[in-house]
Image 1 (cartoon, rainbow, N blue to C red):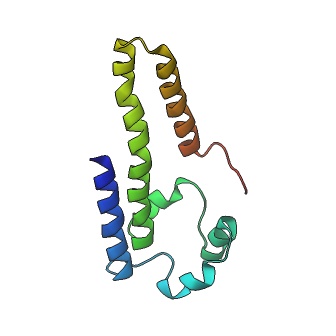
Image 2 (image 1 turned 60 degrees about the horizontal axis):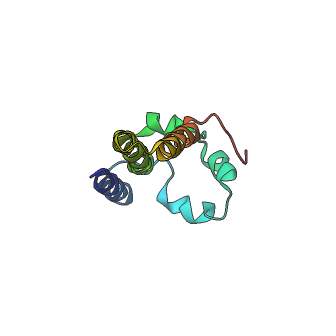
Length: 118
């Protein structure tokens, strides 16, 4: 269900962006010029910060697209959380440890604490 919501969100956001129903933060006309840039150079060129700052810009079609992507990323964490009780009932403690480790790694990645390539 979560993947369907995330995918639908991405599709709706793209339509809103491509039709400019929601004004884009980065105009469509300059996107081809930016394709060759690294992510840090892209962010500098368009005046964006890295991390979760896009949450404050959901009124823009291109930033709204990030919400669907974030939902898709959250689905993995929800799935790991949901299997832990099953694994505990089966006394599969090794797999519980792996699931908890996966949750911690994904949460750390999402947190923005670690910055790579900046």
